[in-house]
Length: 292
Length: 306
Image (cartoon, each protein chain N blue to C red):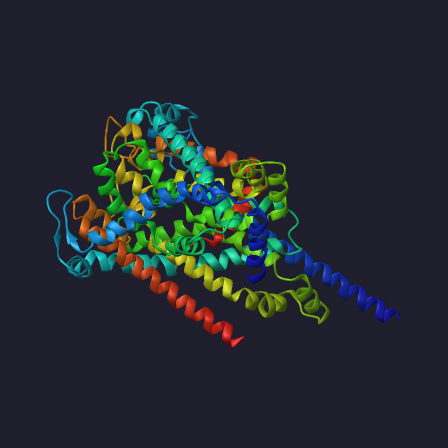
């Protein structure tokens, strides 16, 4: 009896100890991973409070002289980078609005109507997701050159307004919306567009929101096409400008303090959306994973 | 699929009751904006690029039909093959460790041991919200030879970004840092979708955590791993911003030793060789199609096996 209880208490003690070690190990791995994930971002934020000169002697440490000089340079360098920030905001917002509207309208048609060629067209659109979009660049460059659209804001917006992934996601979501809901609206005398605007758009709000985040991030992050299509300094998006920031007096040497301030600035809009709509944000990652 | 089709067609029938010309026109009006924009800004330029790839055309004057010559020229460029080998290196070198780390973190976070899931999940995802360009700049600053963070900590002057074999690893490290959070979130969603019954049954049978992981979870996730590996490969084959910003100065392209395939397109485009630039794009497409086809065959083989 005593023997039994002693052994069981020992084993439960060793079980607890075992659990504790497991917990300790798991937590150390998870915390280490979190620190590694945050370290470059934290350093970016810290370095944005150093001057360009301090970045040369103290690139990795705590700021010696906290200063907003690098943020001030955003208004000076490259002819005023804040303009490029506004270009990025404007381009990403308008592209997102247009893309969501176009995808929702087309998604509605593919989901709730049957019309000639609908199946074939949809299949064709899906098939083009296999084609890397960079293929369009030489052709589009010549086309836009003919139209005199290079070096204009539409060169940045228009190529992004038809993401097939958005059409696909929205259509899939709308397929699950019961037809009875539409029918009811029709009996109440709603026309085609009213059904779309009053019924389909509000009911698909979750997927429209998730897709908006994907689209905004995608356009915000673009680099290759904008770097080719827009040469005027005040029309380039922030991403194209960031790598080119050099000290205007010395030239050639990257102005690291200012670059870090610019990088921080480039993260802020996305960070705000991430903090405000974290669940939608993370679910957009998962639903967007059907990509390609 | 069958049920879905039947359901929609029933819905359509009900909607078609009072069908007028406006009713039959409506769907076309709804798809028109998307389709028109798609044809003008994607399909048109893509087909135009395909046509261009068979011509010699410098953007002005007359285009000259030269058949497959552009492709032959590209395939003889050393830089092109260097680019191909670089992107395949980036793919294999970053995707395998990244997937292992992401999956391991997803397993740990989803386990009962970790209590603050809602804290760790967004933190581990966080690097994803930094744009590729910005994160490349962070790592360029980190690996810089003279004013870099790493060298200033080590007190050395190792040419991380000038020595091509080191620079390629710098790109890999950057890709792992930025990509892990993405796949972590995907795997976390995948893990929670594994049936509770399966896991419970295994617990009843006396399987410990390690056995449950290696005998149930990993085999169940095998196809997702394959899929993720290929998807990530397709993205990596199209890499552009990251290596160029890490290795290039002030917006220039990086040296050929670390350049991705798309650099061959850019160089040709910048010097007005539109035919050759297009040929690179379509060769890239062929590479992606080949990779996807291999994956498709492997997945189908797996399914027949099971």
